[in-house]
Image: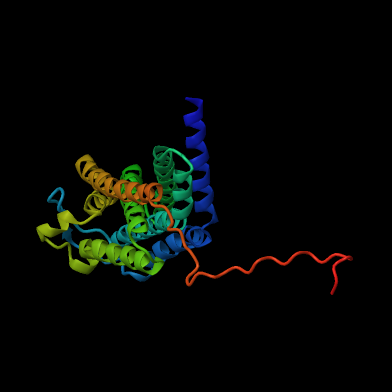
Amino acid sequence: MRRHLHLYVTAARFDLIEHARNRLAMVLVALFIPSWISLAYAVIPSTPLAFRLRATGRLLAPAGNQITQITGAINAVTLITGFMMFAVTFSGGRFDRRLAMAGYPRIHLVLAKTTSLTLACGVIAVYATVMIRTAWSPRQPLVLAAALFCGAMTYGALGVVFGSLLRREVEGMFALVMTSLVDVGLQSPLASGGTGSAAVKFLPTYGTMQAATAAGFTHTPLPGDLAVQLLWFAGAALLGLLAYHRRTKDALTTRPPLRLPWPPRHRQPARPARTASTPR
């Protein structure tokens, strides 16, 4: 038992150190989240924006800058956590394969990544909620933080999927950015007017958007939508687990081919060492 705990703690420590060494992600957390939330509140007019919350059917009319802060926070936390997990998966893939080839249990590596993802998402979600509260007071701040946390977990798992399947960093970043833009953009009441299309139910952050909006402007909790978001996380985590398992399994079964020089070189016989008695 102690051996398994030691292996898990060691792997989790390495993952957390890898996250801390990602300076770009740290800068995005420290500066991008408050900057984006503050700009949304300062630039977007406070004119009431009427739309119908799909989860409850209730007609809401919050200030435009306040609802923009919520959608902006969702966009920010999902992008940052997705980028963090993609970076640690993509850059640490070779290291994980070496550990697997050396006999390190893969279950400990997976649990370590889940632990680092959970801690990172918790910190980022709370931080974004605090930034929103500096401008105005949501009706249910704890539920708002929980909704942001669930959305961040989902995109963190998607980052693991992209980091395990894609071969170049540009491909992974483009996939994350476009997925988040389409996902949040189609649900934003400011951009789409609260679209009534049933297709939005199948977007990755549908549960987060519904729960966060209700938490911001109503006293009605939506545990069902949070459960839907957790199902999205479970599905993305399963895909990430399968991709990660396949990646490390290939490292266990694949051996580098034996390379011989071609064309073959004929070695010359070594000349005997010259001594003092050897005539020149």
